[in-house]
Structures are given as structure tokens and as C-alpha cells.
Image (cartoon, rainbow, N blue to C red):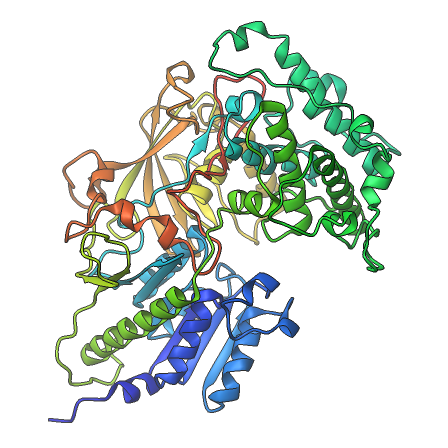
Length: 635
């Protein structure tokens, strides 16, 4: 019998794909090459930020603004020049990283920082029949899980906790927590003001706002004048009109808001001086509203300090004017979505939240705290990343030994004699009852009710008279289910597809369909118990979506702020799964570990940004269906 291949020999003979070159990625790449791996490709879309330097040790200050993947490669090659490392600065959801690309690797190692991308990689690995090793950290907690098609649960077999939703009416009219002020600023006001769609509407477009053109810039109006006009409406006029609704404040427990002073009363130097700033500390770009940040121009250097009312108003106008000026300098392209890595956007959100807090007597948060809440940030610990990076390599070696011992999916791998080497889920400091740093567990088995690997069906409960096809695609298929390019087929017609090869007529038809409610779609519409076939060719992913109609007057916007419910169906595409509540299937793993201990805090983060399901900072905007003045979305 041939001698068993050593770990180093096994590593040298394997080809590995890394996705993510951040906190975990840096530690992982270093550990891979020092363990003998020589054939590595990695994908990362991000560039290096100053905030990365305290834990992502492959980067230095001179690398700020450069590609993480490319710099990580260059750094590692300095101490392992014989390694073959290919760095891709791009999005893992790009068409070039398809199933054929993934199939060329022996194992995929994930160190991603968002759930949507993780779902996409999971589906690519299932289609390519390539093992996936997942990981995540948050503070001192971490985990590594192994996903092998047909042997263990896939990444999506068990439901993931989602961020808390907030009804629109609470965010817009009656906030009582700091998070309400932050979410209002990031998910409502920011996209309404800075969208690149001049006809964009939102839940803020109430009758008085439309009447006053509160959120519409007039021709020739300067950015700072527009900012002051928005300030006057949001923090003064709107509050005064809410106070006039006496029935709203009949409940003694609900504290009445207080309008802010006029901007010029609060900021004596006026909007122009506030927009440009008065303290540039020798920085020539400080008063350039297209290149500098508001805080730098205003001399507000301490991100941990809570601003005064006047400083918050200055930052509001200055960041507002700078975003508008920046967009104009970029060809008048707007900014549709808040980005936690956009310094001006963070300043605007922090200032708006601070001023809203003053309106409602809520504890105000610093710039640092507001950024954490808006971006769902929990700051990472370098040691945890290092531990998780090592655990990934351990599990990768197990997977590779088993894979090569049995031949790969095409039967072309060189058989390697070895003893059985079972995979493990390993949790770092998660289960407080046993005081262990590391706790390995047997992996979960595949879930037959999983819509991704178990061919189960999914039920969508909604009001078909108000739910549009566009919202179904954006909020349900893309945001909730992580699809990349969904195609939606009704029993008798194709309702929507996303393809670069569509002609103008097809694009027009699908655009028209997206604006239509489900009930009014072609071929009889989508009504109660209609079964839609949904697929995504980029992910090799397909399932049936059963639509259940529930009239709009039966929805409770506190319990269901989305205005719809997505749940697993009791019938598998191939067999009966028996049982209606799929959420219970994911409540505990095979060893009784409670799902809340393994939530998106851990599954979503690779470095300092996570979707913290247990934090109070749920930041996805939800639709208040009883409010007639707006549309909505959900994540």
C-alpha cells in the first residue's frame, strides 16, 4: 500500500479558491502558504481603508485605496515567492466567476462580509460540486463550518436571523430610540435626497412634503441653500405639523417632539460658511466641497464626541452640500444608497440622526456610534481572525484528503490512501456553559426542506393587489433569497428575465411588468395559489414559489412590517417533508446548539462589518402598509 500523503504534499497538490481578502482573508492567505498550499486564487472587491490596518497585517498605510486582493498577493509573495497566487479585484457575483470557474478548484474558502454574496457562493459550489468552507467572526466569537453537497447541510439549509424591521410610521413620525433616528437618516432621507432618479419617490413624500417641494432642488438653487431648506422642513416644519395632530400625542407615554431653531439662529455664520468650513488646519482641500469631508473642514476631529446642536447642523449642511457637489462633478450621477464606507454619507447620517434625537429628546450618538449602527458594524479582534483562519485550513485539509481519496466529481483526482477524517463545525467562545475556547461539533446533515439543495418549495404570502412584480424581484428574490439574475415564469407566460441579450421590446415588456401588481400581470395575473417557477442561470438555482393571497387590511404592520411573509412550503419538489414550520428545523443543530448562538453576527462578518442580528441596529427599511403615502421595501 502506498504511504499516506502528508498534509504538506496534499496542500501542494491542491488548487484553492479564496473569496475575501479582509480580516479573515489576510490570516487565511498567510496560513495557507505557510501550510504548503501553492496554487491559490482569491477574489475581493474591496480596497484598503485606514481602518483595516489595525488587524489586516498584510497591508500598510501606503496601500490605502489599493485593491485588497492584489496587495495581499504582493505581500505574501515576498515571503513565499514560489507560490502561484492569482488575485482578482472584482465582485464574486460577476459573470466571469461562474460555475465553470468554480469547478476548476478543489475547495472554496469563504471570508466574506455579507450574506447575499455568501448565498451566491454557496449556490455556485453546489452546482459545481465543490466543497465550501464558511467562516465568520464578530469580536471574540467565531465559527468555521464545512459544506459538502450530499454529505452536510449547505450554507442555506438552516434559516439565518434577519435584522430587526422598523415600521415606517415609527421611523418617520414617532421615533423613540437612537436606532430609529439612524435608520431614518440612512434608509429614508439619504436615498430620497441623493437618488440619481429625478422622479424617485419614497415614504417621505407625504402631502405636505410634495406641496412644499421639500425634497426637490429648484433650478439654480445652491447646494447649501437646498440643504437649509431640507433642514427647515425635516427638523422644524414637519415637527410643527405633527404637533398639530393632537390625537397622535394623546398617549401620555409618547413624548411630544420639539422643533429646532431656524438654521441661522443655530448657526450664526450662515449656510455658506458652514458648508465650506472655517477650520481646515492647513489642508488646502479642506474647504473644497468636492474633495474634503465636512468634519475635516469644520475642525471636528474627534469621532467619539457627541456634537452640539450647532455643530450637528453645520455638519448636516456641509455634508449635504458636499454630496450634491460631488455628484454634480461626477456628471450629475446621484447616490442611491447609503454606503458605510462613504465618509460624507456617514457624516450626513450622523448629523441627521443627531438633530432628530434633539427633536425627540433621544440620546444622541457620536459619529463613530452612528456609523456602527448604520453599517451594522461590530469591531473585529485580530486574534479571533487568526484562530478562524487556522481552523479553515484544518478543515480544508480534511476535505481535500477525503475528496482526493474518493476521486472528484469527474473521477479524475488522484486517489490518496487515507483514514476517515470527519469534518467538523468549530465554534470559538460561543457556548458559555463549558468555558471552552473551541468547541467542535458534527456538521448538520442536509435539510430536505432546503429550497437551495433540497429542492423544496417556497411560499410567499402577500396582498397580490398591492405587491408589484418589481418589488417581488428586488425585495424578495434578490434581497431575501440572494438571487443574482432571477427569471420568473408564470404557468402560461414568462414574466421577467434578466439577460444582456434582451432586445428593446423585451426590455420594455419586462419593465412594464415590473410596475404592475401581481394580480394585474399578463395571462390572468398571479393570484391566490399561483405557482411561479423561479430560476437563476448564474447560480444554477431553481425552485417553485407558491403565492398565497392575504388582503392588505389583514396585515399588522408592527408584526409584519415588510407587508409580506416568506416561508418554506411543507411539500418538497420531490417528496413530502412533513411539517409546516420550517423555521423550527433550523432551531438547533445535530448536537443541540441553539441557532441564535450561530447567527448572522458570525455568518456574515469577516472583519469589522457584520449584519448583527442580535444588535439593536436593524437597519433595513420596511413598508408600513397602512400608510397610504408611500411605497416601501424590505431586506
